[in-house]
Length: 490
Ligand code: ADP
Ligand code: MG
Image (cartoon, rainbow, N blue to C red):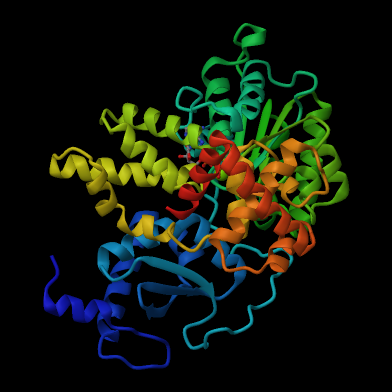
Protein backbone atom coordinates (compact mmCIF):
# COMPACT_ATOMS: atom_id res chain seq x y z
CA UNK A 1 0.00 0.00 0.00
CA UNK A 2 1.36 3.34 -0.97
CA UNK A 3 0.91 6.44 1.08
CA UNK A 4 1.41 9.97 -0.15
CA UNK A 5 4.70 10.56 1.57
CA UNK A 6 6.18 7.43 0.17
CA UNK A 7 5.13 8.14 -3.35
CA UNK A 8 6.78 11.50 -3.08
CA UNK A 9 9.98 10.14 -1.79
CA UNK A 10 9.99 7.21 -4.11
CA UNK A 11 9.54 9.16 -7.26
CA UNK A 12 12.22 11.69 -6.44
CA UNK A 13 15.20 11.70 -8.69
CA UNK A 14 18.60 12.12 -7.19
CA UNK A 15 21.45 12.55 -9.56
CA UNK A 16 25.05 13.44 -9.03
CA UNK A 17 25.80 17.07 -8.71
CA UNK A 18 22.19 17.95 -8.22
CA UNK A 19 21.14 18.49 -4.64
CA UNK A 20 17.81 17.01 -3.84
CA UNK A 21 15.97 17.23 -0.56
CA UNK A 22 15.81 13.46 -0.61
CA UNK A 23 19.50 12.93 -0.80
CA UNK A 24 19.95 12.50 2.95
CA UNK A 25 17.31 9.80 2.88
CA UNK A 26 19.03 8.00 0.05
CA UNK A 27 22.33 8.32 1.88
CA UNK A 28 20.81 6.81 5.00
CA UNK A 29 19.38 3.95 2.98
CA UNK A 30 22.73 3.43 1.34
CA UNK A 31 24.40 3.26 4.73
CA UNK A 32 21.94 0.60 5.78
CA UNK A 33 22.44 -1.41 2.58
CA UNK A 34 26.19 -1.31 3.08
CA UNK A 35 25.83 -2.26 6.71
CA UNK A 36 23.70 -5.26 5.87
CA UNK A 37 26.02 -6.38 3.15
CA UNK A 38 28.98 -6.07 5.45
CA UNK A 39 27.36 -8.17 8.13
CA UNK A 40 26.35 -10.75 5.56
CA UNK A 41 29.68 -11.17 3.85
CA UNK A 42 31.97 -10.45 6.79
CA UNK A 43 34.59 -7.78 7.29
CA UNK A 44 37.37 -9.28 5.26
CA UNK A 45 35.33 -9.79 2.14
CA UNK A 46 33.69 -6.44 2.56
CA UNK A 47 36.99 -4.62 2.87
CA UNK A 48 38.45 -6.51 -0.04
CA UNK A 49 35.74 -5.96 -2.57
CA UNK A 50 33.03 -3.65 -1.41
CA UNK A 51 34.58 -0.87 0.61
CA UNK A 52 35.20 1.26 -2.43
CA UNK A 53 31.60 1.31 -3.58
CA UNK A 54 30.01 4.71 -3.79
CA UNK A 55 26.48 5.76 -4.47
CA UNK A 56 25.89 7.21 -7.91
CA UNK A 57 22.28 8.25 -7.60
CA UNK A 58 18.72 7.27 -8.27
CA UNK A 59 17.36 7.95 -11.68
CA UNK A 60 13.77 6.87 -12.15
CA UNK A 61 13.79 3.34 -10.82
CA UNK A 62 17.43 2.69 -11.49
CA UNK A 63 20.00 3.15 -8.80
CA UNK A 64 23.66 3.48 -9.63
CA UNK A 65 26.52 2.17 -7.54
CA UNK A 66 30.03 3.02 -8.59
CA UNK A 67 33.37 1.34 -8.24
CA UNK A 68 36.76 2.75 -9.15
CA UNK A 69 37.93 0.07 -11.57
CA UNK A 70 36.45 -2.15 -14.17
CA UNK A 71 37.85 -5.17 -12.42
CA UNK A 72 36.14 -4.31 -9.15
CA UNK A 73 32.96 -3.49 -10.98
CA UNK A 74 32.91 -6.88 -12.69
CA UNK A 75 33.70 -8.66 -9.48
CA UNK A 76 31.02 -6.89 -7.51
CA UNK A 77 28.52 -7.34 -10.31
CA UNK A 78 28.97 -11.08 -10.49
CA UNK A 79 29.36 -11.76 -6.81
CA UNK A 80 27.19 -9.23 -5.08
CA UNK A 81 24.95 -7.84 -7.82
CA UNK A 82 21.89 -9.87 -6.83
CA UNK A 83 22.34 -9.10 -3.16
CA UNK A 84 22.73 -5.39 -3.80
CA UNK A 85 19.59 -5.49 -5.85
CA UNK A 86 17.60 -7.29 -3.20
CA UNK A 87 18.86 -5.12 -0.36
CA UNK A 88 18.09 -1.93 -2.23
CA UNK A 89 14.66 -3.10 -3.21
CA UNK A 90 13.94 -3.91 0.40
CA UNK A 91 15.17 -0.48 1.43
CA UNK A 92 13.49 1.65 -1.21
CA UNK A 93 10.45 0.55 -3.14
CA UNK A 94 11.26 2.87 -5.97
CA UNK A 95 14.42 0.94 -6.84
CA UNK A 96 13.85 -1.74 -9.45
CA UNK A 97 17.36 -2.15 -10.69
CA UNK A 98 20.83 -1.53 -9.39
CA UNK A 99 23.34 -0.61 -12.02
CA UNK A 100 26.97 -1.17 -11.06
CA UNK A 101 29.34 1.06 -12.96
CA UNK A 102 32.88 2.26 -13.10
CA UNK A 103 33.54 5.69 -11.68
CA UNK A 104 33.69 7.72 -8.49
CA UNK A 105 30.84 9.64 -7.00
CA UNK A 106 32.13 12.97 -8.19
CA UNK A 107 32.53 11.94 -11.78
CA UNK A 108 29.92 12.81 -14.31
CA UNK A 109 28.03 10.39 -16.49
CA UNK A 110 29.64 9.03 -19.60
CA UNK A 111 33.14 9.37 -18.29
CA UNK A 112 35.56 7.11 -20.09
CA UNK A 113 36.30 3.98 -18.13
CA UNK A 114 39.77 3.68 -16.73
CA UNK A 115 41.97 1.23 -18.55
CA UNK A 116 41.93 -2.30 -17.31
CA UNK A 117 45.10 -3.43 -15.70
CA UNK A 118 46.46 -6.55 -17.29
CA UNK A 119 46.65 -8.50 -14.08
CA UNK A 120 44.59 -6.69 -11.53
CA UNK A 121 45.55 -7.72 -8.05
CA UNK A 122 42.67 -8.04 -5.65
CA UNK A 123 42.79 -4.87 -3.59
CA UNK A 124 43.31 -6.57 -0.25
CA UNK A 125 43.32 -10.32 -0.15
CA UNK A 126 42.07 -11.67 3.12
CA UNK A 127 45.09 -12.36 5.29
CA UNK A 128 46.18 -15.94 5.26
CA UNK A 129 46.30 -17.44 8.69
CA UNK A 130 49.84 -17.00 9.89
CA UNK A 131 51.69 -19.79 11.57
CA UNK A 132 49.33 -22.49 10.48
CA UNK A 133 50.64 -25.56 8.79
CA UNK A 134 50.63 -25.40 5.04
CA UNK A 135 48.27 -28.32 4.74
CA UNK A 136 45.58 -26.38 6.47
CA UNK A 137 46.03 -23.37 4.33
CA UNK A 138 45.45 -25.38 1.26
CA UNK A 139 42.85 -27.75 2.51
CA UNK A 140 41.31 -28.14 -0.89
CA UNK A 141 38.81 -30.76 0.18
CA UNK A 142 37.06 -28.52 2.66
CA UNK A 143 37.34 -25.61 0.31
CA UNK A 144 35.84 -27.54 -2.56
CA UNK A 145 33.04 -28.92 -0.42
CA UNK A 146 32.25 -25.43 0.79
CA UNK A 147 32.21 -24.11 -2.74
CA UNK A 148 29.75 -26.72 -3.95
CA UNK A 149 26.07 -25.95 -3.98
CA UNK A 150 24.19 -28.87 -2.45
CA UNK A 151 21.31 -28.27 -4.84
CA UNK A 152 23.43 -28.73 -7.94
CA UNK A 153 23.32 -32.50 -8.39
CA UNK A 154 22.56 -34.76 -11.33
CA UNK A 155 19.24 -35.57 -9.70
CA UNK A 156 18.07 -32.01 -9.92
CA UNK A 157 19.37 -31.39 -13.42
CA UNK A 158 16.62 -31.53 -16.01
CA UNK A 159 17.79 -33.01 -19.29
CA UNK A 160 16.44 -31.86 -22.63
CA UNK A 161 17.61 -31.48 -26.19
CA UNK A 162 19.71 -28.38 -25.61
CA UNK A 163 21.78 -29.91 -22.82
CA UNK A 164 21.61 -33.68 -23.30
CA UNK A 165 25.04 -33.97 -24.81
CA UNK A 166 26.76 -31.87 -22.16
CA UNK A 167 24.88 -33.82 -19.52
CA UNK A 168 25.93 -37.17 -20.96
CA UNK A 169 29.57 -36.05 -21.02
CA UNK A 170 29.36 -34.84 -17.44
CA UNK A 171 27.85 -38.17 -16.35
CA UNK A 172 30.56 -40.03 -18.10
CA UNK A 173 33.32 -38.06 -16.42
CA UNK A 174 31.64 -38.52 -13.05
CA UNK A 175 31.54 -42.29 -13.58
CA UNK A 176 34.92 -42.75 -15.11
CA UNK A 177 37.25 -39.83 -14.62
CA UNK A 178 40.20 -39.37 -16.97
CA UNK A 179 38.91 -41.80 -19.56
CA UNK A 180 40.26 -41.44 -23.05
CA UNK A 181 38.48 -38.87 -25.17
CA UNK A 182 36.90 -37.09 -22.24
CA UNK A 183 39.90 -35.30 -20.90
CA UNK A 184 39.76 -32.37 -20.60
CA UNK A 185 36.01 -31.96 -20.56
CA UNK A 186 35.21 -28.49 -21.75
CA UNK A 187 31.66 -27.29 -21.09
CA UNK A 188 30.55 -24.06 -22.62
CA UNK A 189 27.42 -22.00 -23.10
CA UNK A 190 25.74 -18.72 -22.25
CA UNK A 191 24.94 -17.42 -18.80
CA UNK A 192 22.59 -19.41 -16.62
CA UNK A 193 22.34 -22.49 -18.81
CA UNK A 194 23.68 -24.97 -16.28
CA UNK A 195 27.47 -25.08 -16.63
CA UNK A 196 28.12 -24.58 -12.95
CA UNK A 197 25.31 -26.93 -12.07
CA UNK A 198 26.85 -29.73 -14.13
CA UNK A 199 30.31 -29.12 -12.73
CA UNK A 200 29.07 -29.27 -9.17
CA UNK A 201 27.12 -32.40 -10.02
CA UNK A 202 30.31 -34.09 -11.23
CA UNK A 203 32.16 -33.00 -8.11
CA UNK A 204 29.41 -34.23 -5.79
CA UNK A 205 29.20 -37.55 -7.53
CA UNK A 206 32.93 -38.11 -7.33
CA UNK A 207 33.41 -36.96 -3.77
CA UNK A 208 30.48 -39.06 -2.57
CA UNK A 209 30.91 -42.22 -4.55
CA UNK A 210 34.52 -42.16 -5.62
CA UNK A 211 35.63 -43.57 -8.93
CA UNK A 212 32.91 -46.07 -9.81
CA UNK A 213 35.07 -47.57 -12.54
CA UNK A 214 37.66 -48.52 -9.91
CA UNK A 215 35.41 -49.96 -7.26
CA UNK A 216 34.63 -46.61 -5.71
CA UNK A 217 38.25 -45.67 -5.03
CA UNK A 218 38.35 -42.26 -3.36
CA UNK A 219 38.87 -39.34 -5.68
CA UNK A 220 40.19 -35.98 -4.60
CA UNK A 221 38.49 -33.14 -6.38
CA UNK A 222 39.41 -29.49 -6.50
CA UNK A 223 36.71 -27.21 -7.81
CA UNK A 224 37.10 -23.48 -8.07
CA UNK A 225 36.12 -20.60 -10.27
CA UNK A 226 38.83 -19.12 -12.44
CA UNK A 227 38.54 -15.99 -10.32
CA UNK A 228 39.21 -17.99 -7.22
CA UNK A 229 42.09 -19.66 -8.95
CA UNK A 230 43.62 -16.29 -9.73
CA UNK A 231 42.88 -14.99 -6.33
CA UNK A 232 44.50 -17.96 -4.62
CA UNK A 233 47.45 -17.75 -6.94
CA UNK A 234 48.03 -14.09 -6.17
CA UNK A 235 47.56 -14.67 -2.48
CA UNK A 236 50.13 -17.47 -2.69
CA UNK A 237 52.61 -15.18 -4.38
CA UNK A 238 52.10 -12.58 -1.69
CA UNK A 239 52.55 -15.00 1.12
CA UNK A 240 55.41 -16.69 -0.68
CA UNK A 241 53.67 -20.01 -0.71
CA UNK A 242 53.40 -20.63 -4.42
CA UNK A 243 55.06 -24.00 -4.01
CA UNK A 244 52.32 -25.19 -1.72
CA UNK A 245 49.70 -23.84 -4.05
CA UNK A 246 51.21 -25.66 -6.98
CA UNK A 247 51.72 -28.85 -5.05
CA UNK A 248 48.20 -28.86 -3.80
CA UNK A 249 46.74 -28.41 -7.25
CA UNK A 250 48.98 -31.01 -8.77
CA UNK A 251 48.03 -33.52 -6.09
CA UNK A 252 44.35 -33.77 -6.96
CA UNK A 253 42.71 -36.38 -9.15
CA UNK A 254 40.21 -34.03 -10.70
CA UNK A 255 40.66 -30.31 -11.21
CA UNK A 256 37.63 -28.27 -12.14
CA UNK A 257 37.86 -24.64 -13.14
CA UNK A 258 34.64 -22.75 -13.70
CA UNK A 259 34.27 -19.67 -15.93
CA UNK A 260 37.67 -19.89 -17.51
CA UNK A 261 37.00 -16.83 -19.67
CA UNK A 262 37.91 -14.86 -16.59
CA UNK A 263 41.56 -15.68 -17.20
CA UNK A 264 41.64 -13.75 -20.46
CA UNK A 265 44.13 -10.95 -20.14
CA UNK A 266 45.48 -12.29 -16.86
CA UNK A 267 48.69 -13.57 -18.31
CA UNK A 268 50.54 -14.74 -15.24
CA UNK A 269 47.55 -16.64 -13.92
CA UNK A 270 46.94 -18.15 -17.32
CA UNK A 271 50.49 -19.33 -17.43
CA UNK A 272 50.13 -20.96 -14.04
CA UNK A 273 46.90 -22.60 -15.09
CA UNK A 274 48.56 -23.92 -18.21
CA UNK A 275 51.38 -25.55 -16.27
CA UNK A 276 49.00 -27.07 -13.76
CA UNK A 277 46.83 -28.29 -16.58
CA UNK A 278 49.71 -29.96 -18.36
CA UNK A 279 51.09 -31.53 -15.22
CA UNK A 280 47.71 -33.03 -14.38
CA UNK A 281 46.86 -34.27 -17.85
CA UNK A 282 50.31 -35.83 -18.15
CA UNK A 283 49.73 -37.58 -14.87
CA UNK A 284 46.45 -38.99 -16.17
CA UNK A 285 44.25 -36.78 -14.03
CA UNK A 286 40.92 -35.37 -15.13
CA UNK A 287 40.37 -31.70 -15.94
CA UNK A 288 36.94 -30.13 -16.29
CA UNK A 289 36.66 -26.57 -17.46
CA UNK A 290 33.72 -24.32 -18.22
CA UNK A 291 33.59 -21.10 -20.18
CA UNK A 292 31.10 -18.88 -21.91
CA UNK A 293 32.53 -19.69 -25.35
CA UNK A 294 34.08 -22.61 -27.16
CA UNK A 295 37.87 -22.94 -26.94
CA UNK A 296 38.32 -21.65 -30.46
CA UNK A 297 36.17 -18.60 -29.73
CA UNK A 298 37.96 -17.70 -26.55
CA UNK A 299 40.10 -15.14 -28.26
CA UNK A 300 42.53 -13.56 -25.90
CA UNK A 301 43.39 -16.87 -24.39
CA UNK A 302 46.81 -18.05 -25.42
CA UNK A 303 46.85 -20.24 -28.49
CA UNK A 304 48.56 -23.18 -26.80
CA UNK A 305 46.05 -23.07 -23.95
CA UNK A 306 43.15 -23.04 -26.38
CA UNK A 307 44.58 -25.90 -28.34
CA UNK A 308 45.02 -28.06 -25.30
CA UNK A 309 41.59 -27.21 -23.99
CA UNK A 310 39.98 -28.26 -27.21
CA UNK A 311 41.68 -31.61 -27.53
CA UNK A 312 39.44 -33.58 -25.18
CA UNK A 313 35.67 -33.41 -25.23
CA UNK A 314 34.01 -30.12 -25.99
CA UNK A 315 30.30 -29.94 -25.18
CA UNK A 316 28.03 -26.95 -25.42
CA UNK A 317 24.88 -26.08 -23.58
CA UNK A 318 22.47 -24.57 -26.06
CA UNK A 319 19.90 -21.92 -25.30
CA UNK A 320 16.86 -23.48 -23.66
CA UNK A 321 13.82 -24.43 -25.68
CA UNK A 322 10.27 -23.85 -24.58
CA UNK A 323 9.90 -27.55 -23.77
CA UNK A 324 12.99 -27.60 -21.60
CA UNK A 325 11.89 -24.49 -19.76
CA UNK A 326 8.53 -26.06 -19.00
CA UNK A 327 10.18 -29.28 -17.80
CA UNK A 328 12.53 -27.34 -15.56
CA UNK A 329 9.67 -25.37 -14.06
CA UNK A 330 7.69 -28.56 -13.49
CA UNK A 331 10.63 -30.20 -11.78
CA UNK A 332 11.35 -27.20 -9.60
CA UNK A 333 7.79 -26.63 -8.50
CA UNK A 334 7.39 -30.33 -7.74
CA UNK A 335 10.57 -30.25 -5.71
CA UNK A 336 9.30 -27.24 -3.80
CA UNK A 337 6.09 -29.14 -3.13
CA UNK A 338 3.98 -26.35 -4.50
CA UNK A 339 1.56 -27.18 -7.29
CA UNK A 340 1.58 -24.65 -10.07
CA UNK A 341 -0.96 -24.76 -12.87
CA UNK A 342 0.42 -25.90 -16.24
CA UNK A 343 -0.83 -22.73 -17.88
CA UNK A 344 1.15 -20.65 -15.39
CA UNK A 345 4.29 -22.67 -16.07
CA UNK A 346 3.76 -22.32 -19.80
CA UNK A 347 3.19 -18.62 -19.43
CA UNK A 348 6.50 -18.26 -17.58
CA UNK A 349 8.32 -20.43 -20.10
CA UNK A 350 7.02 -18.22 -22.89
CA UNK A 351 7.85 -15.00 -21.14
CA UNK A 352 11.19 -15.66 -19.54
CA UNK A 353 13.45 -17.08 -22.18
CA UNK A 354 16.80 -15.56 -21.31
CA UNK A 355 18.15 -18.26 -19.03
CA UNK A 356 17.32 -20.79 -16.38
CA UNK A 357 18.53 -18.63 -13.54
CA UNK A 358 15.95 -15.97 -14.25
CA UNK A 359 13.28 -18.54 -14.78
CA UNK A 360 14.10 -20.07 -11.44
CA UNK A 361 14.11 -16.67 -9.77
CA UNK A 362 10.65 -15.93 -11.09
CA UNK A 363 9.29 -19.27 -9.95
CA UNK A 364 10.85 -18.87 -6.52
CA UNK A 365 9.24 -15.53 -6.10
CA UNK A 366 5.86 -16.94 -7.07
CA UNK A 367 6.22 -19.81 -4.64
CA UNK A 368 7.35 -17.54 -1.83
CA UNK A 369 4.39 -15.31 -2.47
CA UNK A 370 1.95 -18.20 -2.51
CA UNK A 371 3.37 -19.53 0.74
CA UNK A 372 3.29 -16.15 2.39
CA UNK A 373 -0.28 -15.41 1.56
CA UNK A 374 -1.54 -18.98 1.52
CA UNK A 375 -3.16 -18.44 -1.85
CA UNK A 376 -3.02 -20.56 -4.95
CA UNK A 377 -0.96 -19.28 -7.86
CA UNK A 378 -3.13 -18.10 -10.73
CA UNK A 379 -2.27 -16.51 -14.01
CA UNK A 380 -3.48 -13.18 -12.65
CA UNK A 381 -1.47 -13.35 -9.44
CA UNK A 382 1.56 -14.38 -11.50
CA UNK A 383 1.28 -11.29 -13.63
CA UNK A 384 0.90 -9.18 -10.53
CA UNK A 385 3.71 -10.70 -8.50
CA UNK A 386 6.14 -10.77 -11.40
CA UNK A 387 5.10 -7.44 -12.77
CA UNK A 388 8.62 -5.99 -12.81
CA UNK A 389 10.34 -9.08 -14.19
CA UNK A 390 7.78 -9.41 -16.95
CA UNK A 391 8.06 -5.76 -17.78
CA UNK A 392 11.78 -6.08 -18.18
CA UNK A 393 11.17 -8.89 -20.67
CA UNK A 394 8.59 -6.87 -22.55
CA UNK A 395 11.09 -4.63 -24.24
CA UNK A 396 10.79 -4.09 -27.96
CA UNK A 397 11.54 -7.00 -30.17
CA UNK A 398 14.92 -6.94 -31.85
CA UNK A 399 16.00 -8.70 -35.00
CA UNK A 400 18.56 -10.65 -32.96
CA UNK A 401 15.79 -11.91 -30.76
CA UNK A 402 13.67 -12.90 -33.70
CA UNK A 403 16.60 -14.79 -35.17
CA UNK A 404 17.25 -16.51 -31.88
CA UNK A 405 13.66 -17.58 -31.37
CA UNK A 406 13.20 -18.74 -34.90
CA UNK A 407 16.40 -20.80 -34.92
CA UNK A 408 15.42 -22.23 -31.57
CA UNK A 409 12.02 -23.15 -32.88
CA UNK A 410 13.35 -25.06 -35.87
CA UNK A 411 16.45 -26.25 -34.12
CA UNK A 412 18.98 -24.72 -36.44
CA UNK A 413 22.11 -22.82 -35.58
CA UNK A 414 21.81 -19.13 -34.90
CA UNK A 415 24.73 -18.54 -37.24
CA UNK A 416 22.70 -19.97 -40.09
CA UNK A 417 20.53 -16.87 -39.94
CA UNK A 418 23.38 -15.06 -41.62
CA UNK A 419 25.15 -17.94 -43.33
CA UNK A 420 25.11 -18.53 -47.06
CA UNK A 421 23.58 -22.00 -46.73
CA UNK A 422 20.59 -22.54 -48.93
CA UNK A 423 19.32 -25.91 -47.78
CA UNK A 424 15.58 -25.75 -47.32
CA UNK A 425 15.70 -26.59 -43.61
CA UNK A 426 17.84 -23.53 -43.05
CA UNK A 427 16.57 -21.20 -45.76
CA UNK A 428 12.92 -21.49 -44.73
CA UNK A 429 13.41 -20.51 -41.08
CA UNK A 430 15.64 -17.68 -42.26
CA UNK A 431 12.82 -16.43 -44.47
CA UNK A 432 10.41 -16.63 -41.58
CA UNK A 433 12.78 -14.60 -39.44
CA UNK A 434 12.98 -11.96 -42.16
CA UNK A 435 9.21 -11.95 -42.43
CA UNK A 436 8.83 -11.49 -38.68
CA UNK A 437 11.51 -8.81 -38.65
CA UNK A 438 9.52 -6.92 -41.23
CA UNK A 439 6.29 -7.40 -39.31
CA UNK A 440 7.48 -6.78 -35.79
CA UNK A 441 10.20 -4.16 -36.08
CA UNK A 442 10.39 -0.81 -37.78
CA UNK A 443 13.54 -1.74 -39.68
CA UNK A 444 13.69 -1.14 -43.41
CA UNK A 445 14.24 -3.94 -45.91
CA UNK A 446 17.92 -3.05 -46.48
CA UNK A 447 18.50 -2.87 -42.73
CA UNK A 448 16.94 -6.27 -42.27
CA UNK A 449 19.01 -7.64 -45.14
CA UNK A 450 22.20 -6.46 -43.49
CA UNK A 451 21.35 -8.32 -40.28
CA UNK A 452 20.96 -11.52 -42.25
CA UNK A 453 24.49 -11.84 -43.53
CA UNK A 454 24.41 -8.73 -45.68
CA UNK A 455 21.69 -9.92 -47.97
CA UNK A 456 20.09 -7.69 -50.53
CA UNK A 457 16.78 -5.97 -49.78
CA UNK A 458 15.16 -7.81 -52.68
CA UNK A 459 15.96 -11.08 -50.92
CA UNK A 460 14.12 -9.84 -47.86
CA UNK A 461 11.20 -8.70 -50.00
CA UNK A 462 11.04 -12.09 -51.64
CA UNK A 463 11.13 -13.81 -48.23
CA UNK A 464 8.26 -11.69 -46.94
CA UNK A 465 6.13 -12.55 -49.98
CA UNK A 466 7.03 -16.20 -49.93
CA UNK A 467 6.21 -16.66 -46.26
CA UNK A 468 2.90 -14.85 -46.76
CA UNK A 469 2.00 -17.22 -49.60
CA UNK A 470 3.02 -20.29 -47.70
CA UNK A 471 0.99 -19.27 -44.72
CA UNK A 472 -2.08 -19.13 -46.89
CA UNK A 473 -1.45 -22.53 -48.35
CA UNK A 474 -0.17 -24.45 -45.35
CA UNK A 475 -2.15 -24.20 -42.15
CA UNK A 476 0.38 -25.86 -39.90
CA UNK A 477 3.16 -23.65 -41.21
CA UNK A 478 0.94 -20.63 -40.58
CA UNK A 479 0.35 -21.85 -37.07
CA UNK A 480 4.09 -22.09 -36.45
CA UNK A 481 4.67 -18.57 -37.66
CA UNK A 482 1.76 -17.26 -35.62
CA UNK A 483 3.02 -18.99 -32.54
CA UNK A 484 6.42 -17.43 -33.03
CA UNK A 485 4.87 -14.04 -33.52
CA UNK A 486 2.82 -14.36 -30.36
CA UNK A 487 5.85 -15.46 -28.40
CA UNK A 488 7.88 -12.55 -29.66
CA UNK A 489 5.12 -10.07 -29.06
CA UNK A 490 4.12 -11.29 -25.63
P1 ADP B 1 25.87 -21.13 -15.65
O1 ADP B 1 26.96 -21.63 -14.78
O2 ADP B 1 25.84 -21.79 -17.00
O3 ADP B 1 25.82 -19.64 -15.76
P2 ADP B 1 24.21 -22.30 -13.62
O4 ADP B 1 24.72 -23.68 -13.64
O5 ADP B 1 24.64 -21.45 -12.49
O6 ADP B 1 24.49 -21.55 -14.99
O7 ADP B 1 22.62 -22.36 -13.68
C1 ADP B 1 21.81 -21.28 -13.29
C2 ADP B 1 20.63 -21.80 -12.49
O8 ADP B 1 19.78 -22.52 -13.32
C3 ADP B 1 21.05 -22.74 -11.37
O9 ADP B 1 20.23 -22.51 -10.27
C4 ADP B 1 20.81 -24.11 -11.95
O10 ADP B 1 20.48 -25.04 -10.96
C5 ADP B 1 19.65 -23.86 -12.86
N1 ADP B 1 19.66 -24.74 -14.03
C6 ADP B 1 20.28 -24.53 -15.21
N2 ADP B 1 20.05 -25.55 -16.06
C7 ADP B 1 19.27 -26.42 -15.39
C8 ADP B 1 18.68 -27.69 -15.72
N3 ADP B 1 18.85 -28.24 -16.93
N4 ADP B 1 17.93 -28.29 -14.79
C9 ADP B 1 17.74 -27.74 -13.59
N5 ADP B 1 18.25 -26.57 -13.21
C10 ADP B 1 19.01 -25.90 -14.09
MG1 MG C 1 28.39 -20.54 -13.76
